[in-house]
Structure formats: C-alpha cells, structure tokens
Length: 458
Image (cartoon, rainbow, N blue to C red):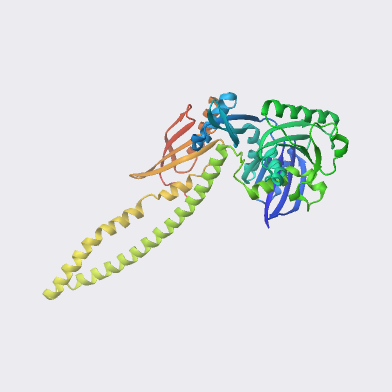
C-alpha cells in the first residue's frame, strides 16, 4: 500500500493524518489534531520529507465563465484573464477550473466552465511553515473539492444528475452543489453543532432556490455525509429528498475517524487517484520546487563531470611523463648513425604535435575552476526569489559570473528590500566581488554581475 502524510488547515486547527491506500482499501496509521500555533513544533519532529496539504481557505472566489471550445488549448491563459477581469483585487492567485457542459448562446456554442480561485496570501503562511523545516509539498488541494470528488464517486454513472452534498468540517458545514459530475458551487455554514439545526435546514432550502433560479440546475436530493444524522427529523422540511450516508470508500474505517478527519482522508484519496486535478500550489512555489530539483541535478552532473575531467587529466599527465622520458633517452643517442638521427627527427615531429595538448593541459591546470565558483554560489532558500539563469565566463585571472532571477513580491519596497538582500548575500561569499547589480521593478527581475577570484574554497 502507498502511504502519504496528509494535512488539513483552516487557519485555526491542523489535522495530520498518515493514510495508506491500495485500490479500494484505505487504512489510517496515525492521526493528530492540534492548533496552528503548534505546527512548527510538529514539523520539527516529523521525519517525513514529502506531504500533501488540504486547505479550507476562508477567502476564495467561485465564478462561472463561458469560452468557445475552439480555443480550449488557451484556456489556462483565458480563464486567468477572466478571473482578473471579474476580481481586480486578485493580483496573485492560484486556482483550478472544470468544464461542466456545452451551452448555446445567441446561436454560438460555448463551454460552461466553473472556476475556483484562491489568493496566494491565503496559502503562503502554510507553505512558509513547511519550507522552514525542509518539507516538500507535493500537492495542495481545496478541502471542499477533495471531499466533493470522494462524495460524488458513487454517482459517477448516473448521468450527471445534480445533488447537494453536506460535508461536516471542523467548525462548519460545507454545501457542495454538483452538476454533470463536477463541483459547481460551494457554500459554508459556520456552526459548532455536530448535527443539523433548523436554521441550517433553512439555509439548505435557500441554496436549493439559488440552484434553481440562478444556476439553472435542479438537485435531485440532498446527501448528508454522516450516517449518524437523524434524517427522519429533517426530510419533511427539505424541499427535495434528504438522506444521510457514509462514503463507500471509507466504509472499513471507524465512523468517528471518518467524521473527524474527513478532509485529509479525502485529500489522500484525491492524491492517489488524480493528483494533478485541482492542484492549487502557487506558481512561485512550483517554480521554486523545479529550480531546487534542477540545482540538485546540476550539482550531481557537475560533480561527475569534474571527476571525469580529473581522470582524463591524470591519464594525460602520465602519458606526457612517459613521452618526456622517451624524448630524453632519444636525445642522448643523437650522435649515433643517420638511422638514429632520422628516428629522432620523427619523434621530434611527434612532440610538436603533442605540444598543443600539453599546453592545453598546463593552461587548464592553472585556470580557475568554474565548478568551484558555482559551488561557492550557495544562496539561502526563500520563496521571495528564484534564480533563472547563472552564466560563468573566464576572463584572465578571474571568472565573470552573471546571475539572473525573479523576485516574488507585491510592492516596490519589498522588491527593493529583497534585491538588496540578494546582493548583500552574494557580496559576502568568499572570492566574489560585485561588479554591477540592477533590479527591474516592473518585471520583478534582477541581474547581478560579479567576479570570482578563486580565494574562496569549499
């Protein structure tokens, strides 16, 4: 069975769950609920390096947009543009979208697309905590969407009928409206009560009215994800059939475990079955993760190249030493007969051909090593910036090093502060001397040129 450490966050509490899955078998080997203030202490003792996050963000946006099917390959760009148009205050955000169905508008065919957007700042705090402890976040999911995928799975083959699922999460109940087997709308009902109240039943009926009048969908039933719910007490007050049910995939787990850890359980199954769908990791964090992997790979490749080059140079030095010994012996016999003189001239011609290689080896041995300069360029890990390009060029007794990168910041002051911090860090690296540095505020990018003189050693 494959195992994953799944976290649930809502800004107040944290749930950590170790879940193993194999086909339709689900097992829980460890679970813990604690306050958000205790997260650093938990992560400092956790030995797991990889995990997934399931966030119930208090701030999010949900929209329905219409785009022509012919431009489907450009949806990533077009959907983000439509979200920015609808919400100008969203300067930096992550999200996902799902196509529900096709509709005809004024005689033209459009795809009806539901979009869920989450401001980066609502997720940044969680990511920072994991970065401080060297943890890698494989995926980040929205808790309502992961629960919806799990709840809707038993109805995947019923023709896409609309339903409302009620998911009990810590401190609230979340209404999940489905249409054509996709999540179309969510609504949160803050509550401290374990069971439904008449006020919540009224909210369910208002949501049903909203579905019929605004979304133009007609839910066939309301399903409470909790087998302990007293459905007979409320079915007469809900305007469509109402029932309580336990999710089939979790039927082998204790009801209390499912009820308390529904969100991280759903996220673990989401990750096992369709990890890329609904991933809301910020773009900056994805770039940071890729750059870290690239740097690790580059370090291994450079180290292997250095070993191969060292072996090559050693072999060439041994061969050169043998050739020099042969030349010395031949020179001592130059006073012999003409045959020996001819042999000498032949060997001397061979020495001339080898002189370029010997000069290259001697020059290479005396030159500064770019791999050392690159290895010395060790910058602290931070989500505030990313390195896009590093180039190294030899110039006389120095190596010219050019560093280009991007700054992840929202205003001028933070961009300038991050840039000055980067320049300060590079300037303190032994052997590095800053030549020029500049920052492009508009493009949030920077360029630093420095010289490496070889005085810094690993």
